[in-house]
Every structure is written in C-alpha cells, then in structure tokens.
Amino acid sequence: MIEKVKDRVSISQIIRDLNLKVIYMQEDIDYYVESEDVNRAALPLAGYFEYFPYERIQIIGKTEYTYFQNVKKEKREEILDRFFSYEIPVLIVTRDLEVDKDIIEKAKKYNRVILSSKCNTTRFINRLSNYLDNKLAPHVTMHGVLVDVYGIGVLIKGESSIGKSETALELIQKGHRLVADDAVEIRKVDDSRLVGQAPEILKHYMEIRGIGIIDVKSLYGVGAIKNQKMVDLVVELENWSQQKYYDRLGLDREYEDILGTQVEKIVVPVKPGRNTSMIIEVAAMNFRQRGMGTDAALEFTQKL
Image 1 (tube, rainbow, N blue to C red):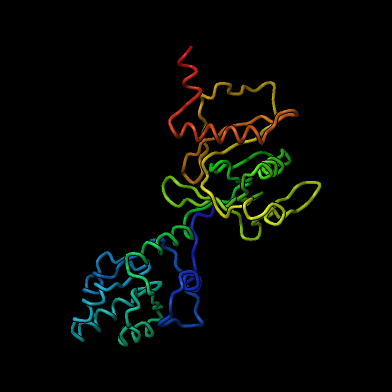
Image 2: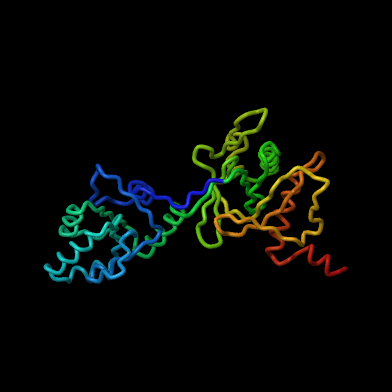
C-alpha cells in the first residue's frame, strides 16, 4: 500500500474541467493549487489582511465586486498591491463580471492568475469545493479489486494468486459492476467517506491468469463497469486453515483502517467447493440489511 498524503492540481486543468475563461495568465509558468479550501476575498479587498489564507483560491462575487467599485482610487491601488503581493494561486471572478484594468495590471506585476466564471458565486464555490475535494483529498493505492455488489462498494483483498480477479469476474457475469482491478486508488473525500477508482491506465481492464488482459467494457458492456464507488466493506480472502477459528455467528466485527477511517471487514476462507462470489453477494446483502436495522445474527442469539 502506497500512501500519497498530499497532491496538487494545475490551474490549466482547473480551467479545462470547470470551463473557465482566462483573463490573465502568463503562458511560460506552471501554476498549481495545493489547498482544497477556497476563500471569498471580502476582507482583503476591504484592507484587512490579518490571518489572510492566501494559499487558497480567491473568489470575488458580486458583493465584493460592488463594494470594491466604490473604493477610492488611491486606496484601491494600495489594497490591490498588497493583495497580489501574496502568493495566491489564482483569483476567480464569478458571474462573468468585468475585471477592471487596475486589477489586471497588478496581476501582471506579480505574475498572478485571474480567471472568470459565468456561474453565480454560491453554485460555483460548491462546484469548485467538490472538485478540489476529489482532486486533493488524501489517498492511497491498494492492491485488490473494487466491485459494486447490490450497491455496496466491496474491496476484495488477499494474497497474490488467491483468486481475487477471478471472483470479481464471476460477480461481473452475475450482473455486478467492476470499478478497479489490481490497483485501487482510494480517496478520503470527507471524515467518513472513502471513494475508490481505478488508475486512468487500468480503467475497465482486468488481468486473468491464463487468459491475460481483458476489456470488461467491451466484453460485457457499459453496464458492467463503474468509474468510482464508495468503499463500504472490505472482504479479505485467505486460504482455509484448520487451525484458525472462523466466526460462525457473525457477531464479531472486524475493521480495517484506511486513511484513518474504519471500514468493516470480513475474512472469507477459500477452499475448493466454496462459491466465493456467492458468499460475497450474501455478505453485501447482509451488510445492507444491517444498515437498514435488521441484524440476523443478533436476532438469532436473542432467541437462545
């Protein structure tokens, strides 16, 4: 498991993905954003720079724009000079408002980026925040297979050659959906949500020993794949051992720590004659049923 604690996203990519217009951006410089937070630049434009979070993307909406239009010329120049002297990653003006020449001149002086969006401020901030949360969230790459089984994101783990991909392929043939095979990128999008997806180069592909690489999307159609899925349940496959005790009631709960989030985990012993894919289907349905308030194991023990 390789952990990538922090990432960054280029301004050029943000422009493409969010369909933004470039007001000023020096072409020979690579600009990046490293903070997933955004800041409405109301207080800095009023001249207050204490605790100014300059490392965030700065937003100017109609309120800030209207206020700044009424600031006297000398004060405007002083505020703009100080504002752009900070290493802000980018200034974005919403509602397609016209950017004044003095703002552009100060941006040129300090080589800062100014962009424009047609969206209203609230909607744009929500959209941008979700985008940055996804791009800059802490993430890990884990060895395993992520499948969507009855709406439950199941991460199948286990030693090499134990049959993870073969089990996932059987689940796909039963109508479930593949998210990622072999390498699963998992991002922590908030305190309790983990979202998994495949690396770009591996999307929709699986490796089956004896056959090689197969394209699941081409073989089974678009209904057999999914681009990303929340990780709800970890299923670890291991070789059956006579010396090991396996839970037979389902009362014991195991959890796996992924990026500081506890994910429920079950261990499934594998041996000839056991239909592993069917067991995973039942595990997913049982997990979903417990989430709806029905715990069969608890109800059974209460009857004893």
